[in-house]
Figure 1 (tube, helix red, strand yellow):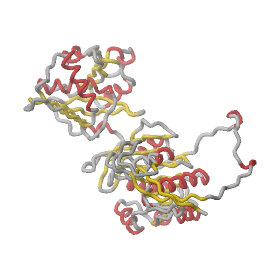
Figure 2 (cartoon, rainbow, N blue to C red; figure 1 turned 90 degrees about the horizontal axis):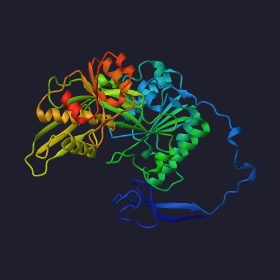
Figure 3 (cartoon, one colour; figure 1 turned 180 degrees about the vertical axis):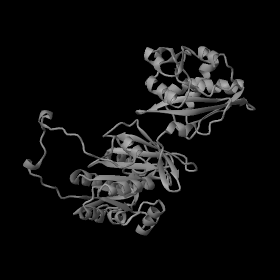
Figure 4 (cartoon, rainbow, N blue to C red; figure 1 turned 45 degrees about the vertical axis):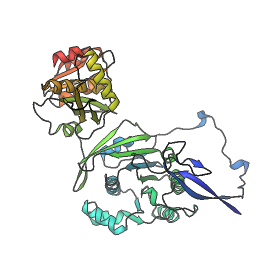
Length: 456
């Protein structure tokens, strides 16, 4: 016999409670609890002692490199750590319309060209709608392509498992996880219990049948994947698609990856014919940079193994309020306030009656502390209305005493600047190395804010 009881779940983090709560004790979200029926069976499953797993010495376990499948999209392979790992479960999240389905559909096209069996499952669109989108993106060109790319429009988990076995698919795409339901759970699709159950079954299927599974997840208004937080813990990799919907810039970032680094990023450009890879992101971010404009500085950041040149803009104006405004886009707001305080104390620039606005051109979000010196120089440039030389790149982290600290990967950053035609670089004195003198670049070493401002 089965026994039913009522359980309240938090839609944001999956916290369970026996009664309804206004605020979740775990994630502090308000009005996030929903009521669901949970059926528990009283029958106990008897497992033989011989069938239970036993502890084994790590010495007796053979290790082998995981086999990977190249997607044909270099930027996606970079973020995944070198390709798709067989038997992995990958979660792809992002805002609606950002390009998740487009990216995965283009990945399916490249895989079937390499004789990889792919099944694309959609619980939101019909097969004719998927076909129309594929034709618009020029994915189904050729009769061979149309025969190999398998589509399924269904939200029943039992039938999806059956179709995966019938097709003998090696890669499966589920679009999206919130639309799939399991008959074992008596609740609507998209609820906490359904998402958790379906993901657990997909994980079991991926590990047992050595199938790579991609699941698309909706995001909340805070930008996190909707559903229980345990969803991110269950999967092997979590990829987030970022960017401005009104623009063409797209950034693919790994928040979790058991088979590679989480510091790698992939850069794409959304066009009418789909997503195009950006092979040289530095030129992409610096395109359209104004000439001889004050408040503009070029900095070089490192994302994983890639050095990127980005433009940092600052605008300083007289304030008409008693409390001056501070706004930052793409840079941590608290970090900007800290740098302004250091600039006033150590640099002698008084901004008590000035509004300050900081922006990273291109929609990039930067967390690298090596941009500190660039932020300060851009603020002073706008404050004094004096432009910085167009061929100068600024690199350095600033401490509270006004000192400029060393940054990692300085040679990689300077090689990227020299490749793009920059002739001068302002770097921390503690990063001095005779090898840097071999670069076709004038390197100016500075130790504090006053030295950097006097040079500029």
